[in-house]
Image 1 (tube, rainbow, N blue to C red):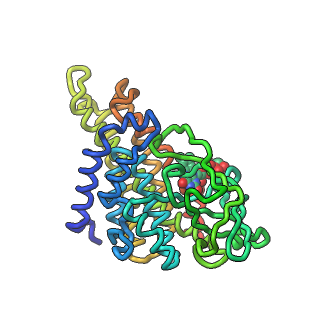
Image 2: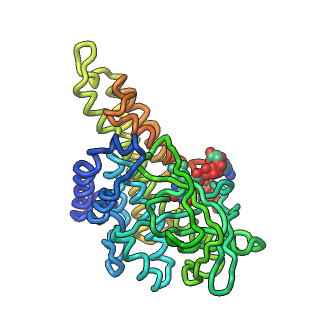
Image 3: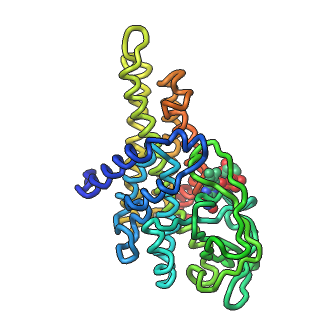
Length: 380
Ligand SMILES: Cc1cc2nc3c(=O)[nH]c(=O)nc-3n(C[C@H](O)[C@H](O)[C@H](O)COP(=O)(O)OP(=O)(O)OC[C@H]3O[C@@H](n4cnc5c(N)ncnc54)[C@H](O)[C@@H]3O)c2cc1C
């Protein structure tokens, strides 16, 4: 067992850390407040190579391993989890899905531009009545020979307004159940495709989340990913890897809050001494540090499983389940360490606490992760 990162992985982590501190930190409070993420910043993330990290250089990506991607996610999330979810969706859900299952034409047309950050992508599975139960798709993609006609509504779509390319999951043949579902590539601007309202959220407020409306949208057959009926499997396989990215996001949020709390506890005085000298505070730091390291090992293990072509369904679910719990607990405790200052925006920990919650909800709630893990251990 080797716990050392390679020199390249260490450099990638440092580059992400530098980017987060110089580009993401300024304005992070304002972006959260205004619920916006400027296009220029998105472009800078593309130029820094964050948008297609694992995509092969043949399609304009950096060809890096999952561990390097996870290290980047961790560093970006310490500062701005809204930025990191944009990176996560584009890398793990959109680029990975297209590179692994797309046709050569689809890769040439979409992947190269997605990997460079010239355009960004969205992954559209959830619906008003299909969240955890993703098989209950009400959106339909009716086969009309050379094209599909898409009708329905998608909910909670990250990058909803800012994306140019949308991977949309829809039911073609209801009688076939989840084997009658397809994944289609939909472009912004296709006739009948409308952007619904923007959600006003508790956390990751810089990231735009929208519902999407499809009204008789004609999608060419060549935009289907995989064989007819592959859509549900596509979504599950893609989300399985996506969870590793979200686990890394949770880890970064926890580590960011811990680092702020540790520093503050060494500066703030109460009863004539720095508060870290009070055992109650020192023990909080000890718990945070231990739990974050345990989460980190699970996240890195899941990434290494993926890189080694081992099954990562269970290790990814375990990493997400545990890291998101640690993110929640650590951020709540970090606010406590800051006292009253923890309750106001300028000290960042209240935002991290709000941001942490989503990691227990999206890409499969914690309850759904437990279903995946229990099925894995019981071999079902
Ligand atoms: C900010 C944000 C961004 C998102 N981004 C995207 C995106 O880009 N693309 C996308 O497709 N979706 C996205 N989602 C949707 C997200 O994945 C779903 O919200 C999530 O899967 C939960 O579905 P739901 O909201 O319908 O909750 P429900 O499925 O209604 O669940 C409600 C509660 O019941 C529990 N529950 C449900 N079924 C079971 C069961 N069998 N056993 C035990 N407990 C159960 C859940 O764990 C949860 O606690 C996003 C959501 C948010 C809030």
